[in-house]
Length: 507
Length: 110
Image (tube, rainbow over all chains, first blue to last red):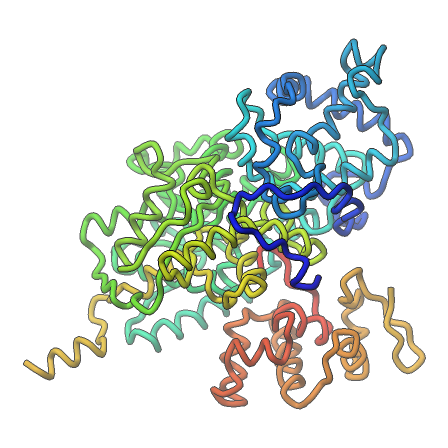
């Protein structure tokens, strides 16, 4: 896509001129039969797909009453229309949340409501046809399930649930998305999204331990599969592979080292991400979550801490007990699970960490609230902890911190544009356009406060921004991990810094 | 979906990654590079060869940082850095270089 296609916005929430059909036909690669079958779905479109799709819809409405309420209660008030970053970025009216949800709602009305059965045209009810299925596949993969629209819905309709249901219905008839489903298969086979086997993981961690020692002169460990450790750290596998994620991992290790706790990673549960959420599949989500339970039991840990991953924290915070509990074998003195930021913030408050904020003086920071952390979870003991704790940690390690405009942060945060299973190259055009509201907010903050970098606590956000930021005038390393900032600022016990050496020399 | 090399047909997926990893050859690498608008020089080969050696050992591509460290050792700090890797492989050393090296695409949040 030419950069010229990226909408130039004066304000992050500018309502675009409507472009009917602008994103019509956009279609991510479809999952191959082997990817589908591994997840318990038909390999390809089943011959009686229409009947089975409607059966699945009925089953979901029956089992999940909230879903039925979401289908029934929308009054088309329009409050959500301009709240979606993909609508703002593409101008396609079918990316208005109400319109996207109506692609499914209109079929539901046709087959499951009195008016729709007998007077379909009067109530905008539609038959389920191949065209409708194609439209579902396209537009339900133009929603990142970020739930910004839901914040503004006066009825509290959780529109992401409708996207998830649509994807589940499509999976159940053999139409799945390659990116998400291939990855879920890798977690089942190998233990993580990347397909990083235990031998490779161990080699990577040993390599990073060497780097840490070279940088600091201190031996900081990245333990793997250590029986009897107190803490199991479950983190996205991108933390073992990608930039700037790895710097975050090094930050966790330094914090644990200074806190003097025993911890370990697990090669069996080497993934925090749980793409079962994205495709609305409870069974797949549960299977992935159960790996964490097994790893915790096998290693005999007392606590579980999650690394920087947005939707993983939602699954962990909101569903872990239902999916893989009870966790009565863990130490009841600690929350199950804990977020790495809760741990780090507690250590900062206790004064365990020696921090030199000036080590981050070369950058001016803002913070991107990741949608699943902001709108589907919490941190700490206070309401709003999921907004405050990351900012508290950043302010404790950086001198120059500035928020982006109020209407684009905290619970109204704008999605990075790559969440919910859309972080795939075949959706790059959508990703760039969908990022433009967030990027416009960042540009404003750069103009107003000279902000150079944006911190995030989600692997998807970090990768998405590092890919799209160059199109908006930033370097790809302008997105940083929060624990990367912590890592920069920490002075390890016994670490000989240039500054200390200078001070000693002048005494 | 296939590449044609010396009269052989080599299957690839929607994104150009070869389906059967044992199909790889140097001629194929040149062919894949062409479709990516890359003309292979010694530096490209250094990266591709390292990726293949690493894959032989670990059945996965290395983290970018591990790759850069290795290139720094063999080619010096001027070339062993992220910026230079992106000059060689504009769509990213992990994905684009893997494609040319005949390795599977790194998946996940990367």
